[in-house]
Every structure is written in C-alpha cells, then in structure tokens.
Amino acid sequence: MQKKLEQILMPFAIKLGNNVVLRSLRDGFLIITPLIIVTSIFLLIGNFPIPGWAEFWSHILGPDWTEWFSAVSNSVFSFTGLLACFGISYAYGKNRGLQAIHSSAVAIISFLILTPTVVTVGKQSIGAVQTMYLGPNGIFLGIFIALVSVEIYRFAINRNWRIKMPEGVPPAVSESFDALLPSGLVVLVFFLIRIGFSLSSFETAYNFIYTMLQAPLKGAGNSLPSVLLYNFIAMLLWCFGINGPTITNSVWSPIFFVLTQDNLTAFQNHLPLPHIYTQQFIDIFTTYGGGGSTLSLLIVMLTVCKSKRVKELGKLAIVPGIFGINEPIIFGLPVVLNPIIAIPFIIVPVLNTLISGLVFSIGLVPYTNGVMLPWTTPPIISGWLSTGSWTGSVLQLFELILGVLIYYPFIKMMDRQYLAEETEAAQLADVDINFDEV
Image (cartoon, rainbow, N blue to C red):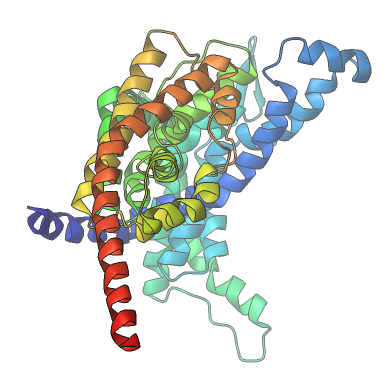
C-alpha cells in the first residue's frame, strides 16, 4: 500500500513543485514576507491586546502616537497587490532566465497602466490612485499581470527583438537598450487591454479580475473542507520526504494571503474580522512545532519513552521544536517512510484543523487579526497575540494535549521496539566482553 501511494504521489508532487508558475508564485510571496512580518510588529505594538494599552501610551506620547506605527504598517499593507506583482514578476522572470529586475519593472508599469487613476469627489473627477486598487483587493490582478507581462517580455526576448548597441558601450547602457523593444511591447499590450476593459461593462481590469476570479476563489478557500484538504495533502507529502507546505502553498498561498490581508485591513480599522481561515489560522492553530504538530510528539518522547535513541533525540529536538523547527524529528526519528508515525502525523493536524474551525465558527475564540507573527513564535504566546484573547492560548494548549494523547500509543510502540534492540545490543556487547576475558 505504501509503495503504491509513493508511486502515485511522488511524481505528481515533484511535478507540481517544479512547475515554474507555481514555484514563482511561492517564491514571489516569500520575497515580500519579511516586509510583512517586520511591519506587522509595528502594527501589533500600536494595537497590543492589553486593556488600557492605548490609553497608557497616549498619556505619555500624546493622542497621535498610534499614527507613527500605522505609517509603517500602511507602507506595506496598503500596497500588497503592487508588492505581490513585484515579487512574483521578479521570481518568474528569474525562473524563466530573464533579467529579474527588468521583469519586475515592466510588471509594475503594466500594473499601474491597468490601475484606475481617476477619483470622483462630488461632481468633480480628479487624478488620483486609491489604495484599494493597490492593496489586498489588487493581489489577484497583480498575480495575473506579473505572469502575463513577463511572458510577453520573454516572447520578445526569445525572438531577439532588441536594439543592439556597438561594442564599447557600457554594459548598463547596452542592457537598457536590449530591454527597450520588449518593454515597449508589454506596455502596448496592456495599453490595449485597458482600452478594451474601458469599453466593456466591467470598465476596469480590476473589476473583471475581482468579480470573475478573486471573489470566487476567496469563497472556495475560506472553508473548512479546503483547509482540511490543504493540511491532509501537506502532511501526507511530508511522510514521503517531500516538504508538503512548499507544494500546497503553491496552490493555496494566494488565497490565504488575500484572506489574511482582509482581516488585517479590518483589524487596522477596528472593524469586525471577516474570515476564519487565514494564513495565521493555518500556521498557529493547526500545527504546533512544525508539520505534523510534532511538539506533542516531543512531549511524549521526553516524558514517557525509555529507549535512549528516542529520549536523546527528544532532548536535542525539544528547543527547536518549541520554535517550530522540526527537521530533527522528521529525519531523525524518522517520520519519513515510517508507517507507524505517519498515522498520527497526518491525523493530529487534520483534527486540530477541524476542532479549531468549529471553535472559531461558534465564537469561542476571536478570529485571527491578520498580523503576521514571526513563524518561530512559540505556541500559547502566538495564540494570544494572533487573536488578542487568552482563549486562543487555551485552544492551543488543549490541542497540544490532545496531540500528546494521539501520539502516545504510536511512539510507545516504536519506543518498545527500539528499547528491545538496545537491550539486545547491550547483551551482545556483554557476551563479547566475557568472551575476550576468557
């Protein structure tokens, strides 16, 4: 059964992971993730979930102190669509063998060409750009433009549509002229696209993408079955030695990113949070200590297991595990190709997802606020910071304990096996010593 699953899953997972478009989507979001995490810290400080926090600092720093922190967070969160376009076009151009910076430049220009630049104030129209087009609502448009603009640019480069400069011209000048005709083609295409949409009932490319793609995908992704499938596939792939989230994130990342940004925007404006299933929900309330929720496994290994192999590994892996690093367990226990541990490794995150989804949906825990915490933030702390409530920490503690109970019979089975092997090895060593003495 295991070999058959491996034969089916491995080629599919490798093919999916190597797909240049999906890989570029994942890499593109990773480019802007550090900015999101850093600016999230500023947002969290300005809205720390402690009663009286804002009032306390207002007395010391004045009533406008939160605007200082909002200026930092808005510098990223109000432009996530534009930044997604930049990151994905950079990664896609690089993966396609192009000059990545030129790929990003034409994508940004194309994004701005399709962005509405007129705002109606009363009866008067003025030239301006609303951040609603550049922020979370523009993410899917940014993805589309990043991929299409780079493909058009690549089309021209592959056909050698370039202006060749004579020898002796500085490389920077030569490269800029090489990009002239391909860039012009990209601009021309998106100029025509803007005209086409302005003559249609959608009026803008933004309205078309949001209506036809972004809203339906958000609806499909913002569901318990979708998140259950995400974690099931990710954990199953880990059991075969494939980093599951790198595969599943290629498909689900754009959806979770938009849902997260929606919650973040609502949190910034002190509005009700709209979505349960954000990236924070996945990272903070379904897996503890990394894929498979192996922090629960480590607790069992350290407290009840007796074999030296398991116990020593537990001692080495517990500190990294608390901070979400579980490669020592994945490859040291191992989890990979281990049918005994594979069962709870898949069950625990899926069950955590189901429980968390139900708990959030009935209102026992507030929705996650969209603030991107560093991925190394330990459980209990992350539950409180991501929801602003101690109930988030209680939910994490409950699921950690539940994971301990589920992992217990499986790791004890391995522990007895390893203990028997260690005892047998020790007996053989004693026999060898006695034989040498004789």
